[in-house]
Amino acid sequence: MIYIGCDHGGYQLKLELMKYLDSNGFEYTDMGCDGEAVDYPDIAEKVCKKVLETEENKGILLCGTGIGISMAANKIKGIRAALCADWFSAKFTRLHNDANVICMGGRTTGAGSAVEMLDVFLHTEFEGGRHAVRINKIKKLED
Ligand code: RB5
Image 1: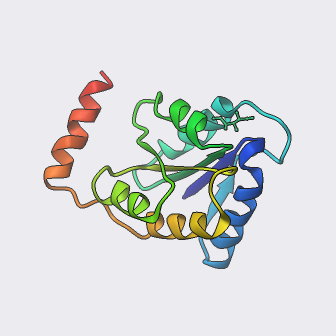
Image 2 (image 1 turned 45 degrees about the horizontal axis):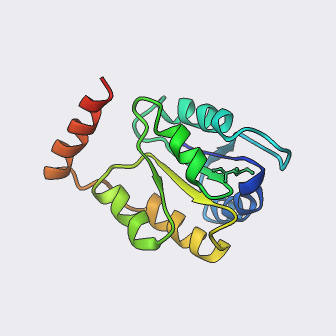
């Protein structure tokens, strides 16, 4: 399952990404907001708690720059949130970092690139191997 959330700065981009999810048959839950002013840490918390329910879940978080919401998400144990602004990063954060959340900026990233980044993020599996060793070291930093 995919969980998507945004603050007011990411709302328009969220609508574009939900269009992509709808037209590509993805099941997802929209955790807000609906365009009203909200505090991005609250949305990060809501989405990330759902993402952590199973290993396969993924999250999409959007704020004005993507920065605040990714900072908040990465405070939550088990979350590996990647702030992406290019396709290569969106692909390699799945391959190498096993990111479970992608973050983007609604005021910094156009809808076309955002859709391409989301598409590659959702279709790329973690490579494991030497990268798993590194992820385990990240997990140790959480303790
Ligand atoms: C909200 O105005 C803005 O600060 C927020 O969307 C985000 O850009 C924070 O990092």
